[in-house]
Length: 311
Image 1 (tube, rainbow, N blue to C red):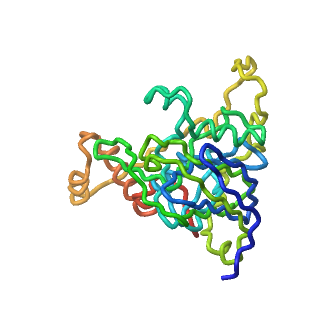
Image 2: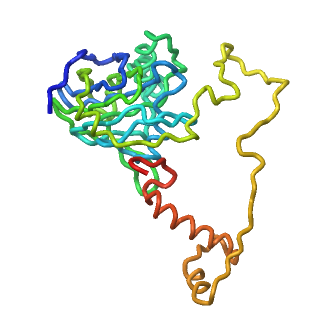
Image 3: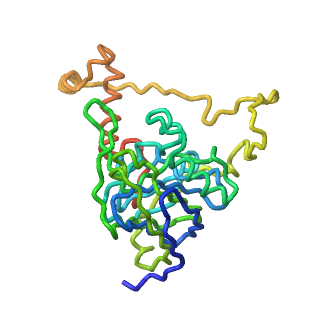
């Protein structure tokens, strides 16, 4: 593989972040200098900040701990792959926990002044005119989390060492904003704060060729498709007296499809039906059919997720 050309280098000190214009075809490496440091990461479409990396969509597609070979997706209705995780030497990242904030440290610890991810992020992106309200939930690099059997998310200590890194390949022009997580009183960074190195590379042909194809679909909408494409300048929300509802795909149509089962098929239905449906054969059969469809065409672990790869 040919060597990548270095375009930019920076070391983030604790308490700081850095906004970086990362163009399509460039790679941002986020690297441990000493190890054991969590990094919060946000990004926006460089040409339209209303499109941004969305942890919820990313979590739906790739699970709680996305790593090498997965994408960072933007929020609906755009739902585009903005970044591809080209490399990840640790393989532990988090999209469950929100960024830490000043409120967290004051309410839980009694610190009315403490470094925190929200304030760091807000200051870093202020260079590009974005406000604290524009900060969104972060992709937490190197952060180790688990979900307990009773459904609670927990943070565990991490094991990253000097030189460990995550390489993010931009698939669109983005404003990438990593910051050094300020959680020095939590297990997030093993109760410490350490610097993080940032390097921007020009991707090689091999890097670009390694990215799986993602679908381009009619339902991925951009402002040209919006009935209201203008960004509000006023903060207060005031009802538009001229508003007339125009919901998409309305009115909905429901067609009745009659299904005849023989004795063996009826017995199979009774054996597979879920108790929640009682004697409602139609709902029980519908559940069985769509459960099979999810497993057959989506994969049980990615039900409801957009397809990745050749269709």
